[in-house]
Image (cartoon, rainbow, N blue to C red; front, top):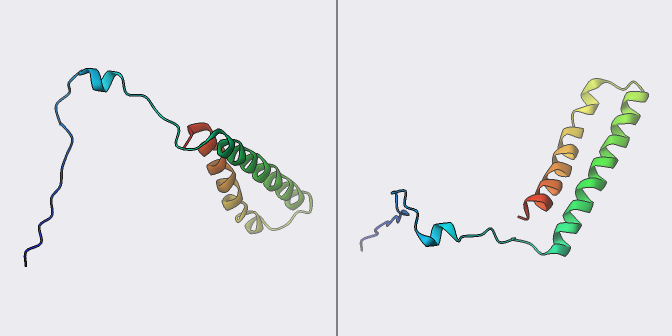
Length: 86
């Protein structure tokens, strides 16, 4: 039994054919899903800002602010997915 791995590559030459000129970006998600992701991103950002404000106002140790990075990251992912239509 022989296993062969085949890899196919696109054309490596730079050509200006009609196919390449007429390609368009098609949204990967619906408008409703984009709105949901945008709302999630904004809501997550506001919640994270409130928590950050409380931690700063209460003069909590700086290391307790570090987990907020993940919350800001989740907010940014939701926002950019909505903007990039992915």
